[in-house]
Structures are given as structure tokens and as C-alpha cells.
Image 1: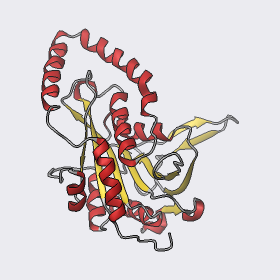
Image 2: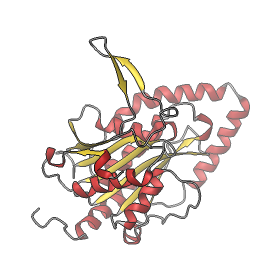
Image 3: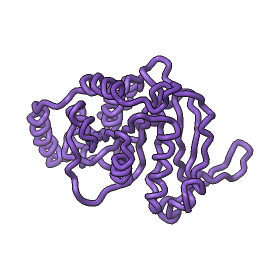
Length: 293
């Protein structure tokens, strides 16, 4: 099996893009509470998009684990929804660039071929940088806006954006594999990750999605509609508060997390505004791989 067997693409479907950046989120190991994929889906909702490529799910999923869903369409005929990984182009005429987006599902097997599909997509669409977004379970309180942290294995990009170099060793998800592949292919990539309260993993946490979107908007210079999540944030915050108030032990735990969070937040980290300005400068300094552009 090779990429041509599983990647169906029409690269000419969208024409030339403006300084495109590939943004990736995958449901699975690095998407606690669906905060990352939920953020990208919200960003693209009601926006005109074009599917330029799709990855055949059949070689990549154990369907006894990631089961397809059956539904009745408008004609009352049964249809099957398979795990979907589509490369989507979204134009942002009111922003600094266009985006190439994969908001999909982490596969179970054949990760090398899957990763190569994404690398080839980034190359074909002339994406100069890849940004992955993820969500981890962390010991943080639901009463605070979670911080978004960034890292990159590209030394020049880490120095320019004042990001950390990855130091984690241990089990990883496909996003970890992708960043290693991007580094090998000399394609600059950045990981943005947000925390989700560990004691609320069975609940949605739109506050984390909004934090990711705000950082993406400032870093990439595209509107993400993060402010429109206010009502969802308020509704879920009330549900979270009610759950905590019913358990004195959990309430005390949250108070301890609040103290720790406030103390840690005093540590200086690069702001999203700083990252956005530095990323623009980094991109301007990169050699133009498309001289006819």
C-alpha cells in the first residue's frame, strides 16, 4: 500500500492560495473532551470550504473500535458514516492568509502511510508551516481560562517565537509522529495545546476550545469567531459549578487548583500577539519555493 492507493485528491480544485498554513486536530489521544477538533469545526462552521483531498478510512481503522454510524437520509434510506479525514481549504479574504484544515480522527494503524498523506497534502498545497492543536487533561480549575502552550522542534522557529523545544519522552499519538515527520521533511511545525480540567473529562469544555481559537486567530491572523462561544462557555460553566458545589471534597480541590493556577500564571510566557508577529517575520524570511507566485 502507498499514498496513491488511499489519498484521493484534486489539488487544482481551489487554485492558488494566499500564504496557506496547514492546521491539524485529530480526535483521539491529544483531543481530550474534543476541545481541539471542536475548536476547528467551530472556526469553519458556516464558512465556505472546499474539500481537496480525502483519506480512505478502510486501511487505517479497526471498525470494532471506531465503529461507523448508520442513519436514515431525507429519502428514508439507510446510509453509513465512516471515520472521516478530509483536507479542507478555507479562504479568509478578511484575514492574513488562507487555511488548509484537517479536523479528523486519529487512525488505529498504518500511521506511516497516513502521515505521508498529510505531508504530501501540505507540499501539494504549498503550506509553509503546519500548526497542530491538541488538548490534554491537566490539573487546572474550570473557573479559570486555560493557558495555551506552544512548542516546536524547529530550532530557528523556537528561537524566533520563544517556544520550548519538545522534551517529552514516552507514548505518543499521531500528532507526535507527524511532528517528527515534518522535522525530517524540513517543514516547520508548531504544536499548540490547551489544558482541560482532569476532573471534568466526561463533560464538554468550550472554554478550552475558545482559548485555542483565540490563540490561532492572533498567531495566524484569521478570524475564528471565538467570542461567539460565550453562551456555550457560560452554559457549561454553570453545569460545572453545580457539579462541584455538590461535593465538598471536590470544591476544596478546585480551590487548591485555583491557587496553583494563579501562582503559575505569573510566570512570563510569550503572548499570542507576540507569536503572531514573529511568525509573520519568520515566514517572510523563508525561501520562496514557488518562484512564479
